[in-house]
Amino acid sequence: MNVLFPALHDASPAPALRFGERALSYRQLATVAVPLAGMIGGETRVAIWATPTLETAVATVAALLAGVAAVPVNPKIGESELAHIVADSAPSLVLAASGDDLPATLAALPRIDVAAAEPEDGPEPLPVPYEPVDEAPALIVYTSGTTGPPKGVVLPRRAIAHTLDALEDAWQWTADDVLVHALPLFHVHGLILGILGPLRRGGSVHHLGRFSTDAVARELSAGGTMLFGVPTMYHRLAVEAGQNPALAKALSGARLLVSGSAALPLTDHELLAAACGRRVIERYGMTETLMNTSVRADGPDATGTVGVPLPGVYARLVDDAGQAIEASDGETVGEVQVRGPNLFVEYLNRPDATAAAFDGGWFRTGDMAVRDPSGNYRIVGRKATDLIKSGGYKIGAGEIENSLLAHPGVAEAAVTGEPDEDLGERIVAWIVAETGPDAGPPPSAQELADHVARQLAPHKRPRVVHFLDALPRNDMGKILKRELHA
Ligand code: MCA
Ligand code: AMP
Image 1 (tube, rainbow, N blue to C red):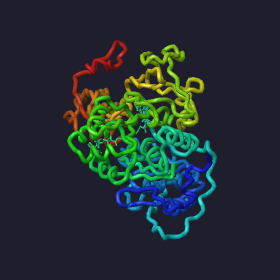
Image 2: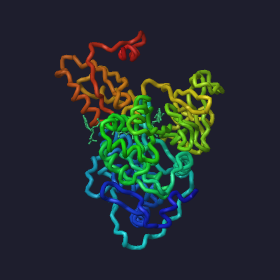
Image 3: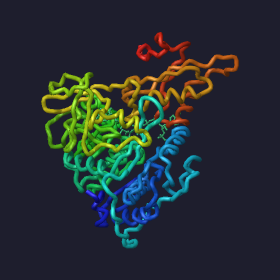
Image 4: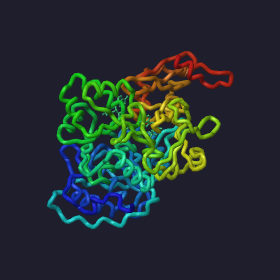
């Protein structure tokens, strides 16, 4: 397995990456990534300013070739979240596209500008270096928990290679596929599946820069064979395809439409099927586990489920008493636990959290599911109500509450996730404003949303803010979030 990207070693003129008008063949990618790998070789960890650009893909490939762990950073990240990630992961330098303005915390690090332009008749690429061992940390991806700041998930090369090869099998993913997507490049879905996936297959990816239904229609009509997206994107495509024959035709021509990161509601499955006669395939994964299950491209219709465990992955359902559930009756609900070569190594600097995440060798996903007689898993909910999935992003209620409480106009704060047709769930904040003698006028909803966007990230901002005189609490003083929902 040692070679992650065989096509890079061949330095073929086949297309590898395209972002808008800018593209690199495998040969060109080797020509820019190998010298960059040489420059960063020996560092323990680098940060990547993960804009949705060619430079992010080149920087990630270079880090993988060099065997240097890379931390992709959301380019819209807020101040306190960035300070946490930089302090926790301690990168020795940052890779960014030349000309990109970096926030102060990253600008303080040594910087290497990533070059991502090379003519096809440029110099012969240098030989691709010897690649490091499979267990070496490859990427550190930050993910939210119920409380506290995000944790760094240490992903080894072994897990990346395994998950991408399991998807090759489940989706008959080949070098002939042209993947289309518009996912952000600082999470597993967009970066590992959406960029490293095509590169491992020797195929290509067309990244749209930003999501729009028009761009999806254009790229699928221009030779795209696969589309990856989160449910919010498929919801928008489903609604639009009903009135837009060009989009419906483009979708119907794709070989495979794949949704993940959150549940795709049946209504959207049905809207899409009605508009373009196509089924969307769902797969189920997590930052810590990469991909666990998928509906197979060559299998029977399993709409409404996330399919069967991928090759090499073991999955089980466990009841409240910690006993494995043997039933495959489509009714008995248990927590999904998984083990296999797709799993992460640890949470960076958090041995306590790492230990708590495992039940023996099994990783506790926190997702609740049933298994049907065909072995398909159907996710029905989540153990923790304090985890919100909005637009496919996992967001902890606790981190938003802490951010809101840091605003001088806020005395008390609670955050909940409410059902949302577009985002799956929307973040709702319940606020008691500061009223002391020194308190200024109460903050507006917009001000609080902007505050969270500035401190954490724009996708973590509350979409709705309710102001209350007091939060409902039990005798112990614990906030009764269920009453807030009511
Ligand atoms: C609005 N904006 C603001 C503010 N208000 N910015 C700062 N402060 C404010 N107060 C800006 C936003 O930055 C954004 O800017 C624009 O307004 C609209 O943003 P928003 O409303 O948040 O969302 P959207 O643009 O409608 O995005 C929907 C989306 C997005 C495209 C579906 O949510 C998305 O990309 N989701 C993907 C999530 C994902 O990849 N998850 C994978 C993790 P601008 O317009 O400039 O952007 S899960 C995973 O990896 C596991 C393994 C798995 O299973 O896949
Ligand atoms: P993240 O931690 O951002 O990687 O998100 C992982 C979580 O996303 C999982 O634990 C699930 O709750 C959810 N998820 C991912 N894919 C699916 C899917 N196809 N259906 C339902 N939930 C999903």
